[in-house]
Image (cartoon, rainbow, N blue to C red; front, side):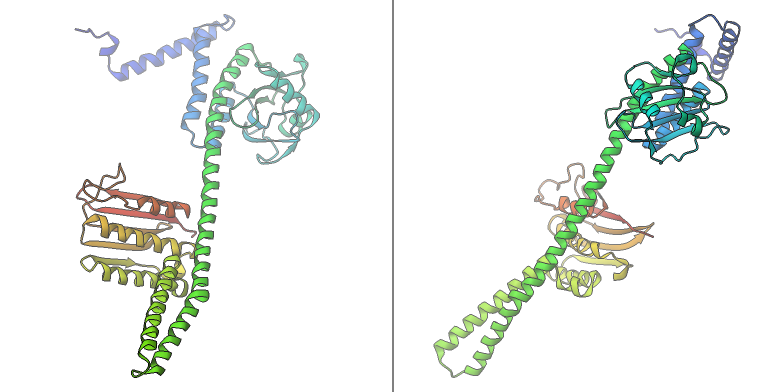
Length: 440
């Protein structure tokens, strides 16, 4: 049997009180032994300041939030007047920015965070010196390196400590501390602390910059996909119009001409000629019908001529004729002018695919379509009362044919900036919802 230690039996409040007392004792020891050199107290302070930086990294969300918290924590850890991050730290860059800075109220940095500043000779020299070493670069008259004139003018800096950061993404950065009230000497312990902190900030920068690049790539891909989808939609509309004008209309004219010839020939006309005209007229009608189907498949004429709501009504009417045993409920609280033109074709296609999926695979007898605006979003929802399926596999339940078409619906939604979600379970039906963010 494992025996508990005395501390394990103590209440949590007592342990916290004893810990606070121990910290006070350590502070007193440090006060009365200032020249003792490296000690447990110094190590504890070092770790506390490292933890301060790591906590700032953990609590932030996104590059700007994390780095802003980090420079605040660094300034606090060193009790400095200013802490900042500069980018890029490269000798050949003609300009630089200081996007992240934390300043004492009495010593602000006077230029904006998004300002592109010229890389003067002094700045370039300091960047080169910082890049050439692993240890911090001290800018102080006693060290032979003075604070650049620009830092004295725009930041009131009198001494500085700098160290270069080398994240995995992009050019190096420069992490800097300024003291403005006097020419501060930076102790070896502080230099050691900045070196340790720089490693953690570099790791955080690498992660944040990589995530930022990925987010930008996703957004760029989404924009390109949306443009491609719009272009495809325009091509469908154009092809449908060309098929109607170049093929449909001439064939319709041929069919009318053949019908007129039959009428003129009359019932008592030449039998073989009449038979040929009937056959030709039937073939022309079949071709006209086929072309209309192709035209509707490419881009429904009702959608182009009358808008989405009429096109939806036409589709639902045809759907009920094909599947008379399925009850269709429609709840639409929008007008055509509330629906972006770029989404009209997408919405119709998704509704078509969603209802055909329900008819073919759900084995239910009811399906509903809702289109409305909620909380700044355009919302399309499709629900059926069928047998459902396991969403973890995005496939049908056993015994149901494959080919649900869900990837196509999701692709159409996401390529136009929508957020696609599906909820289903065996014997629980299926609910599909897509949200598009709308400008208010």
